[in-house]
Amino acid sequence: MRKTTALFLTAVAASAITAPAVAAPDLAMVARITDEAMNHGEVVETAAYLTDRIGPRMTNSPGMRTAEGWTQDKFRGWGLSNVRTEGFDFGRGWSIDSASVTLESPRRMSLRTLPVAWTPGTPAGGITAPLIIAPMKRPRDFAEWAGKLKGKIVAISFPRAPADAAKPGFERLDDKKIGELDQYTQPVTAPDDGDGWFKALQFGKQLDEFLAKEGALGWVRMSYRDNGLLHGEGYQHRDTPKLPGLELTAEDYRRLARLAATGEVTLTINSQVKFDDSDPNGYDVLADILGSDAKAGYVMAGAHLDSWVAADGAADNGAGSAIVMEAARILAALKVKPKRTIRFALWSGEEQGLYGSANYIERHFASRPANPDPVKARLSYDFKLGQFPVEKKADYNLLAAYFNIDNGGGKLRGIHAEGNFAAVPILREMLSPFASMGAGAVVASQTRDTDHEFMSAIGLPAFQFIQDPLDYETTVHHSSVDTFDHLRPQDLRQAAVILASVLWHTANADKPLPARPLPTKPKPTNPFHVADPDKKD
Image 1 (cartoon, rainbow, N blue to C red):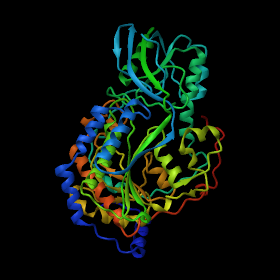
Image 2: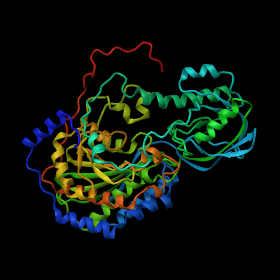
Image 3: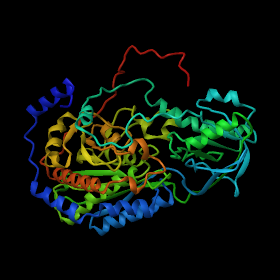
Image 4: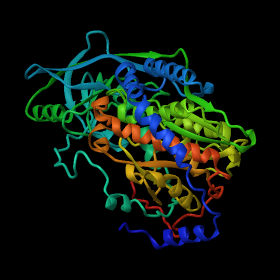
């Protein structure tokens, strides 16, 4: 049996005593939803179109603009209402035409590469220059390389050694693994919350400025995974870097490091990319199945439509987008008439900092004061999380629940309660028909880094599903093999059934799912914390 903290058991027991009886699921509707999904479903075709035909969907890229139009057309074709976009300030569009890195000496060969997002291209034909291995992780590393980089292509990563695989490359969750998620984690409040992310964002800009000042011609970095995988993430969508940057596979990068240790190495880097300044706004796509009671509010499901560009953005997050779209199609095909409106959201800008869902929160749910640091205030909504008070907006009390899909294409196994103890018995009851499909767990643990996070942070009933990992974290996530081949059609269909059912039951429940308290400024977790004067950047 799974292990559960005493605190969690006590809270659940208390909620069971004080909460009203939980309505039983409408099994006739569950049967209709299941039949529509399993025998007449379109989720596989939807996922294939997003990935094979449209392909990568970097925020504000041509691929993302195509996806924004196509998804709206699909929602309209299925009969949804109020199909629309909501825009938010993001930055430049960026896309890749072609890229290559060629080892010129001591022997000639093509290396596997990908431009780093939002870096500029090279002149046509590329740049040929000597390579220097100059690892830099912090601003204090710059002094070692000052005066040594002019006219060079700089290899900025330390060439870490290959690592043995520590866990299976492909995994289905068992009861033990799911049980390990049933742990309540106490919140931690520290004076430097968010500083690590801020320093990482700032270092990319500082490094580019240092290299340009030193006269470097461009740079290459090492992929953070082995086995030929590439990623290409980059975060300077607001401040365009000065120098072209490319990522090399770990194996090719190590080869260059070994060669450079024993003699001169010459590379040609050729990165042909395009910037698009025609519209700096990113756009969320929204669509509704209208409810019969306008005062009853609405329930939402969401997934992020944007992706990185190393591959087709299939598991991250074409799968989630296709599941959300399929839940909309199923309910529309059944011509349901819910009490509450059911709203479907395909977010943009998730990969660079949850921009799209953060914009929806600020526009509809609640606002926070801006971070007093103007640089942080411009970079990401993350840096507003420590700002109080939280001021409710019109839709705050109208949201019955939000359900997010963004953990790859694996089967749904349950749901994270996100510390919302009062919602636990309700969520369990809603999932109870799906034990035979492998989905019934409700666990205490919170999840981060996806579009429900900022909603949960202001107390709203916002939840992320548990999914079988498959090869998401080990291989696919953000990588050059994130393609349709790594999805499992049977898992997509199962997920669409469960999401459609959960939305239907939430839309027709007597009451919204319970919200957590509106957060107020917390005390420091450790009131005796003393900053370490020797701690370095």
